[in-house]
Length: 317
Ligand code: TYM
Image (cartoon, rainbow, N blue to C red; front, side, top):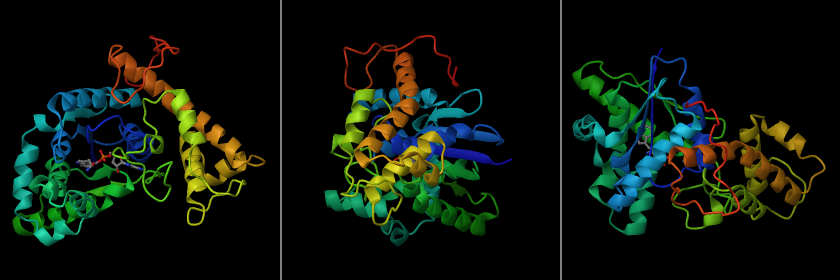
């Protein structure tokens, strides 16, 4: 039973945080629910300036990436948000039930409007559109990373307000958090890994080459203790590596720490890079195949590496 809904913005190649925080669980949730919907939320993307040609390309890249990750149209509905005009329609109705102070307190508005001094009305009401995305399908379960929990709480509040005024229409949607709901930046392990990070070494993209991935982990910020332990408060850098390692291997953090016994941090970084490559390389190859050899923006060309085997069978096949 239950309906799953989630969305991702088509603003460039997804990163390891998107994958471990959300996309990997999207794949697993395709079984066991009465309906499962995943949306490429282009109406959310235009809350920040977008070049139209680039946005169109990003939507296609995102579709290819989701298929490459294992989203299978035989088991779930994958669609472009702006093709279903009811998202914008319901957003208007729900916006009329939402107070301005409720939106003003949400962290994304506080952060993004501070940078720009004055954000757009669209950026301000963005969480209402997100609530509409979810409630439009009377969704019950929403797999997201930790940074979306407050948006989910707004969707719950709006559903309650609507139900109270007009009768029980919407189920109260629940957030589903993965085992690694907050993957940190490799350059600043106190902040989350983010698509908009200006430091290219901070973020591992799903279309990064193995060489890029090794480089990024080699340069990952840690501390001056060479032993590998898991202590997110006092050792955020190493702990982020352990958390990533555990996530990509399907281990607990204890198992990941045990596998690092006798290794110095510098050696451990290469072990983690290797495990990440193992996870990400097939996705990268499949994205390239689906895009018919077109280069995915953000990916660097590497003349030494061919596109990879063409006959690979995939979960999406
Ligand atoms: P977006 O596009 O920023 O991110 C997509 C998903 O990736 C998760 N995520 C992370 N998880 C762990 N660690 C990280 N460092 C990390 N960075 C991102 C996000 O939590 C998200 O699950 N507003 C949403 C898109 C959206 C949506 C919806 C989601 C629009 N409508 C309805 C769910 C339901 C967003 O901007 O996600």
